[in-house]
Image (cartoon, rainbow, N blue to C red; front, side, top):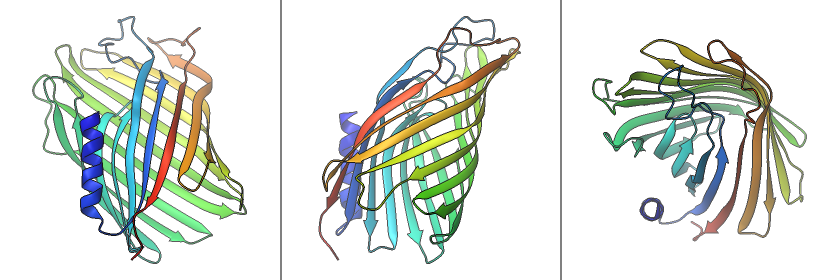
Length: 286
């Protein structure tokens, strides 16, 4: 992890002779995904807690108000590990972004798998916006043990009202892996409403999520585990001073139900929680 942080910082400095820079560090715990050791729908392993002391290490920079870039490592309960580098070009009403990513250390047989992500955002500032993003592993088949493919896509429509940014989204994330027990695929489909609440001269903001999700794990040997949930989540960010913001968030199902052969989660408490800090730097102005 120290090597990853050093690499991110070095890449950011190379990008920017003049910049504003934010460093986000986030970690947490959660079990809202199937345990990686569950290799069959007959296996007892279901929802084991997954600790991620570094769930997100991300550098966001701005150059000349025209180019934004993002370099980061994130740990997702479905997509697992990704190291992302992304550059965005900002026009008056359109934003285009593209960049490579790699999936580091998701298994021992294939320590690194490359991919690419892209996005398009159109907005009428202060009124409406729409966003389409997609990413996928490239050049990787599923022929040998350890081969895997990471894929994600999202469509977002949003609008502003006083002190609230509202967004409706549909997303799909998947991780498909070839193992000694056969091919296993995790999929997470989500429909959600999100609201970012803020006020001028108030040092904190609140982000709220409410939606429906379907989590699936399919096995090439036969059978599919399916867990559906209505969920609620929040994140609050507090500005401590001009350079430091602290954040705290959590998400858990309001109600969950499983489809046979999985069955309902019973007494298992499903959740994910995280905390972190955002450090802001301005090296020099153009």
